[in-house]
Length: 131
Image 1 (tube, rainbow, N blue to C red):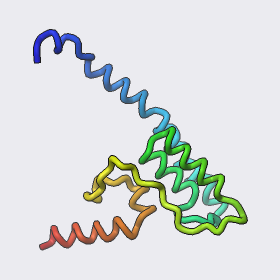
Image 2: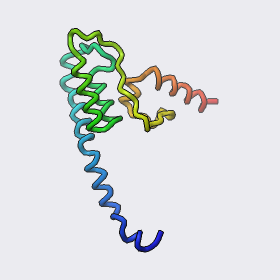
Image 3: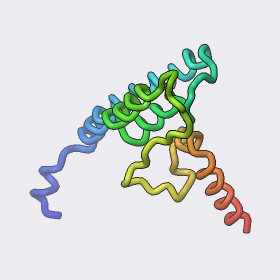
Image 4: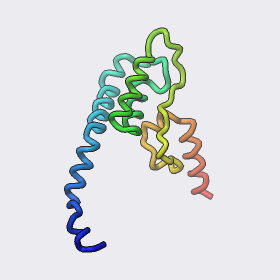
């Protein structure tokens, strides 16, 4: 890298600030959803017709897809959730760019919403490590 390219680079603190601001809407939505799940959701109890529940679906969608696309998925899910809906299993669409072969890199909400997939991978990983 030449000296002129090094001089034109932004300082590290500036890139950290930009990254923080980029993720700020997503992090605010995650905090609001976690507060809803901790405070309001227990009042209603287990009344959701879908698995995962609408709040768990929204939390996973925002965590995996970001604020804009995750909010879009969550809004579509909430519109589908009504008394005449049959309900059932409705997973969040997986992003194309994520490879979750290692269970330790997967967000906890994703593991909780897909126990069949990640429990099997976790047991497989533990059995390999034990051997």
